[in-house]
Image (cartoon, rainbow over all chains, first blue to last red; front, side):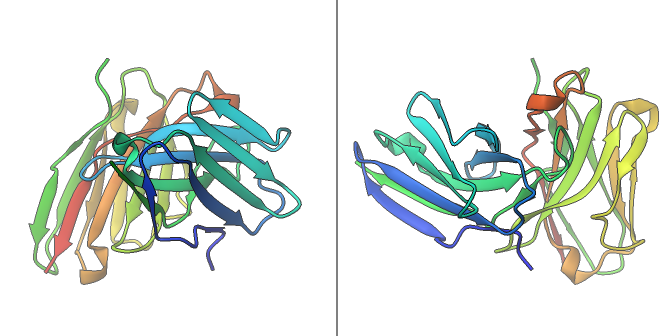
Length: 113
Length: 116
């Protein structure tokens, strides 16, 4: 059974608008969360992360929000740019400080000019 | 600085054959991970090396898969004999041990394996 769920396989947004990608997880013990971006024929690239002691982390146009009670996190991209078009993976690291990642299935974001 | 490299980029083999995938991590990275993405599904963890030692191999699907990391540098993943369900993209990732609280795994481009 999936421990990390990205229920939207795809999302289309107009350039300049906000993109919101969502992710749900099942285990309340998870304490470190990451977002990766993937272009075709490339490996995933780390984007931003958040630990469970925070509810928000911001890096430029990218902000990750964590709602522990709902076991939900989201990635906001604002303003969205055509170069942001990629597959975005939500991941958790159950081992704490290091170790394997558990990924969601990904959401394909298309940003239209 | 060179990133994680993987060879080959693509491999097409017949069921029952053997295939060996190679990963060269970023220089100096002690952690090396193998993951696999089967078509339409999530990226799944296979195993984790710290230097030449297997730290966690709980994700290895069965004993047809053998991973090695001799000398703690590059790693190989051998599938013998290959089955149809082994088709997918195999990713390698590496990270530095010195930053455990903010460990970032850097991924290679993957090897696309197709078993016919």
